View 1 (tube, rainbow, N blue to C red):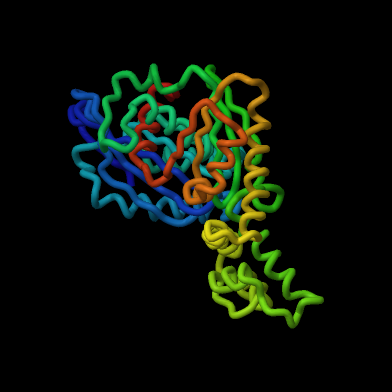
View 2: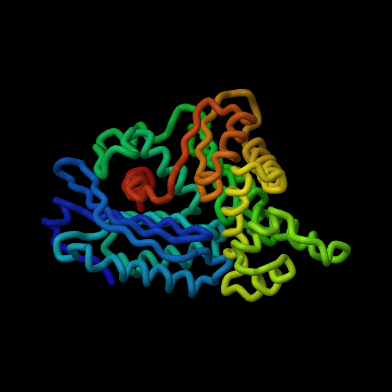
Length: 347
């Protein structure tokens, strides 16, 4: 499944591949770098299911990457281009036993590539944000002048990435590139404030209405909203529905969307859950910001993308010097990050 090309064509244009594998979805993007004009354009992308080796197993995860890779081949002009740089950001690869496997997969699939980098998904998000900030073209264009990205990609003040999706984690990188992480322990040991955590708290509230002393009571408005989302007539049906789901963890995380909608309509139970989630996310950031110096807060993940309620309260409490909301669908930013990583992390 390698991409191959002649040396002459390789000098004219190169392919840059970036993979962003999270707990909910995995995104693969390919861009073409034109050496003569130093322009990078997004040429194809593909999106699939979760790609977290810590929860799915390494063999299943690598199989999913192969499926995504096969899905983009028809859009890639393989005879005239080659993958020169590969950047993979994936949940779970903070563990060496997984990162070694993913790195081996990348090198076996892209034997002609000259640059490889395997890191966590949250670290990749920070790199993507650095590059997009330097380009100053995150929303405006599909191509970007790369002449100054390597020099200007990293800001002169501390940045903190806060991700609240299926899971939750915060990462900081200082001006020297040193990283420190808070959270990211997975749903069994942590993930407070995440979509999974919000959904689990909502389901617990609903079940608390049904067992044992209120067994015959009518469901509250909040419980009716959650039951409708899950597809059961009453709270007592939630247990079987969740445990019988194909992916219970993801099914629980999806409940967070209904909690957010209920909060927007003024439901106090929903707002109480989101307030607790906000406090948990605030704590993650505060663990990484230990002084009064200004910092930038970069937010990502489905919870922070879709819940203005949480975002606004986080910003009000944390008062960062600047904020940036990264939408993971902006795959062109990941490809830019892949090329920038090749320049700053040569192999």
